[in-house]
Image (cartoon, rainbow, N blue to C red; front, side, top):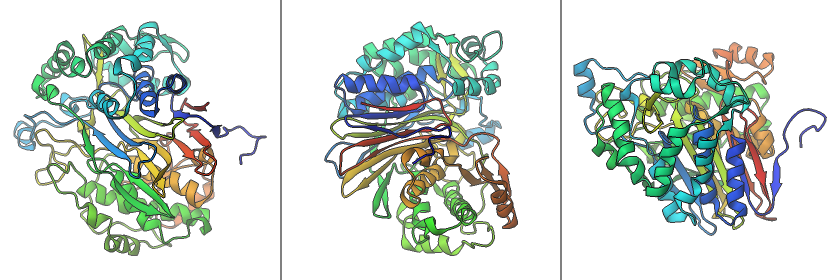
Length: 529
């Protein structure tokens, strides 16, 4: 239990339903749906649609979506991959022959957005309300305006350059060349009209017709390879979730093309260690070494499994765990050695994650993203759709599993998580933060399961992330820990920005009480009724 004499948040306890999102208006929209009799999926879609309006630099309908859904009574959650694919004309040979690089603001970083199709598919199978009904709160905020929240405004001000290069994006998201002030009201009428079209026509209103033509025209004008057929053929896939057991709990993740496999790999390496008995320094060191092992293999091997075999079984095997564990020296930092080192740009990408549990015990873990802040910064001028830059995760490297190819999904960083026990949902959970997300899942789960923190304390705890030769550590770590990490050979630095964000709802199986937490690094909240 937290010290009530100091600033902080308490977890939220509820008996009938709970929601945790990173924006207060998103949380409120979901609670209203639950109170009106909607289920977890209905509430989640309403919430994420609102956030696509009120937190435009973190997410949008021009982005991607993944979900894990555990209906009451289901022993295994359903998993949905709602990420988009590259254009049919895209190939690494074309990029090499033409000397074209995939840069953050280029049309070549834009894959076909998958979110809208994923929402519709999730609702079709598990929802009780129509997409048109659930989009109404988002439409109202886009038309009537929404106040800019503090963290949203802070991030907006840091991302001005991203939308400055596109005249349509600048006219929409900048005001006299600047980000809006915190508390200012922002309206997005063109986005409202597009959401209204989707509400009336369903996903066809996005992937076909005027909206699709607008997106394709803008991308092709900038040199993109996209066609209207690429958009018309878009659709999510129901996939089989992958899992491992950790301390008696079953941890479920979506399989590749996402990075959830790395979560399971890292938990397997941690399993023999008594994490709670370690000193703070030893724990930070161990997590850094485990993180390097997981991400080293992720960067070398994870890709679209429809086009390249990802050795999931091997990476979850006892043999791999033993090999990775044997490479850890508790006294010194070491470099992973199993596969050739492949460096990636490290950045904390922009995403929203939400958890919902309804009165019947159905649990939703949903994540939606446009990757970097304001995505590509490319705005389709008539529809007001801001397009993500998820294709930036591709390589242009023939022979590499994640090289760009026609109709291919890139290795994806956004991952929802679901914790289960004895065939029943225990907690939908997730952590935002781009590449950090896999490590974020590990840290959140070890905080709760190993250290015994409540869900809010687990989110509040300082975070660290070892990637690309650097260990970033939030300023909640004492200087002595950073010094100790450096003494062991780590390049440990104070993180320049808060690392990620997260949400979790714990389902107390004995009492039925829901315990919800929302990350203080964001503007959001947990609510229940």
